[in-house]
Length: 486
Image (cartoon, rainbow, N blue to C red; front, side, top):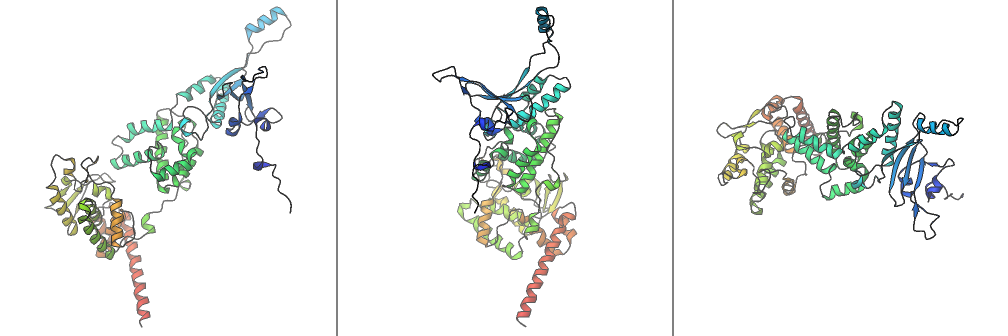
């Protein structure tokens, strides 16, 4: 068997910078090279206490250089010779010797910035990586061709802001305006906190950051330096936490870039993703069925039993979850945020002011839904009118609650599902459960649309499909039973 040659490739990588420099005395400046770039001991110092500056030339771009000073600090610069003759020096040379050649202008050095390792996410704002330095060189070369001052290119970059800084400005100026709804503002702020600012300490997101430091350090980088590849890596990293969440993050960054372009922070936008470049978004209802009538009954019993236990701490959350299942077709946020001035008990009507289409709707409630509201109304009579929770139908248990109403009762919901012995599904499935059972009862999809407050019949068409599949499943079960007992 032929022995494997272990003296080539990754098995025997260069151990010093000298081994990487080619016959021309050049080397491609990249992070590995910069990590090996160190000051050279001064040969004139017998004690070995002094060091000398070392400069290396890039193999790809003429004039692009990196250096390390005697103290160990590394940086980049671009060196070029301006076109033209130094008239003063030429005149002085010809005065000494009439046949002397013309003296050309001296080379000019343009400092690009200090070196920073791209893995060191907290220092990315204080330096630049080799890739960014090379991009600056290309911009400087183009500027020189058209007669612009190359120093202005570097100065403009130094004044440029990081993605996180521009995101903050965008959020304050645009997101907090009337153009965005409260739910949208909350979602954007949450995504920014998780994936741009990294101000959360949750185990899941801490693990995600530790495994994808480079991709998720996008917020520390200058917006002018970001490329499409940076956004692709960011999208891939966030997709590990949630595919739909990753798509929403890219949409947020697209809006930030658009804002930065309008403010002339950047010259062009690069955060453009085609549909096939994003994650495929499959609706949850296409993957799993809503709860059927028997499961609804068990959930109701389990929720009522839990509302009476645990010293009443879960009472409001249990009632709010039951309301999601019985107060027709509204999202959990609209239910949890409901205020008493929206409810008319004599008319059995709830008025929803904030909807997706910005058109207020009035929905009737009866039966179990009215019983839930009556229970919550009795609780309201025990609440101090000056308490901010007084105005909410489903108030928070905590007096120091920021919002005043219940926000995310997922823990309670998990316990209810466990007690009811039903599969755990997102709380939003309670809305789907109401719609499918309503269609099963009426057989009229238009009636379901009107009772649930949907604007478009296409939004509720899927519920009819689900019920038809459920009926076909029941029919097949019945057929198998009859055959086995024939």
